[in-house]
Image (cartoon, rainbow over all chains, first blue to last red; front, top):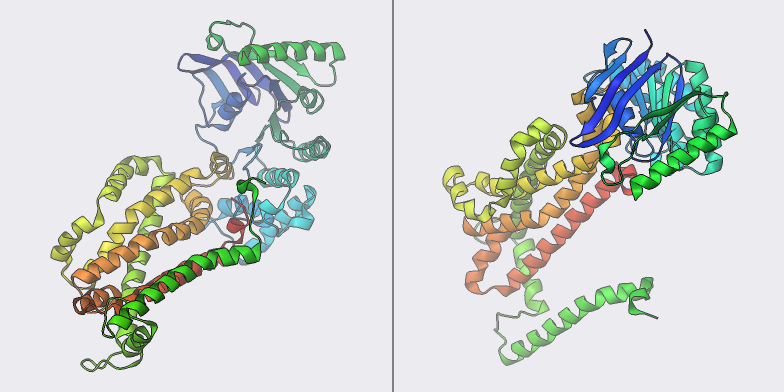
Length: 261
Length: 271
């Protein structure tokens, strides 16, 4: 039995079909990147993994058990924006998860327990490179630093699955490279299973262990919502070549043009 | 250069801001002087001299009958009613607004009621309040509460719902239960917004206070100006109105500073 099983999964909103007949098996510790045109159901799939949405038909299972219907501490998330709490400093943001876990009613730690938790927090902050900004407010941080904070906030909970929804989409190219190194480092250290949605095919091609391309195989120009997207390529990373890259690139851009037409 | 692109500098802006006040004072002064020249006992447009002597009488001399300093007594009574009323209204707004904003079940049950309540003209139910709660302090405080709480409840609920959905998901992935979502995410972020809502509601609150005092009371700023109206005592009314305005400005600014001091992240654009 694999870690995550997706079996003949369909997702529809009314008469709009978003995903059709999705089949996938993912082992623990894999780093999957999800690419595809906007509107091809990558984010919807991520929402289903998160528990924000349920499948219309088919099976979505974590170690054989159906996915819980709401977000929980086993599945972390980093969004493109708004992932951190503006009313808490960097340190308080990272501390939050530990506090919530240990104090169901107060939601705050004091004394010895707090000091112990802060040691973990400071180590986490150090490893994402925010040690110089421990007591700053999020609005004082740059976009890249805010994402580092969001990543630290999620990783300190040691989630079994980490979901990244275009986490670096709003960052400058140079910063993006640093963030790739950071996420790979944390992934190697923790062995968390990661799903990352990205717009950037290049990013998807070189980061992680496995590339999943979401695309529409069929397209009805009169009724674009009649057919959903599915996984058209499922490739191990490192065994891919330039020709394949070009062919995926042209197929994805064709779908994008169809959808926006 | 187009008019829309011309910005006044610091000194010019200050002068432009002061000018309307000066103009009003000058117009009043001229009109007052003219009337007083014709009839030194004129009561409609009292001059500075008459007003200062009235203030002196009301604020710094014991009242002959009661032995009280009337203006301070009025101020204390009014501020107390305003404070208690706004305190209760803000607390209600916080609790109901938070529940409405974050719990879909609470919203389904309460939001239509709150919306309807906020449409009732509060002064229309003042007679009911007098009948139910008597003519004492309670009915005046209740008018302020009923007049301001429903709108603040809606405002707080709206602010809670404006918090990014991403945050709500994020805190759940950190393991928060509903209580923790309210106390650690929604409450701390909505408090500065509640203070803003109170600042906006203070205008209506003064209106309800003065209306209630005018109709049935034995002390208070509103009571006093409606009492001396019978004697056309503009020399008391005008300073009282200026005093009420000053109090309103001071309270508003104190709340603004409190907000800045307590929530540095809020005012620096961290939301």
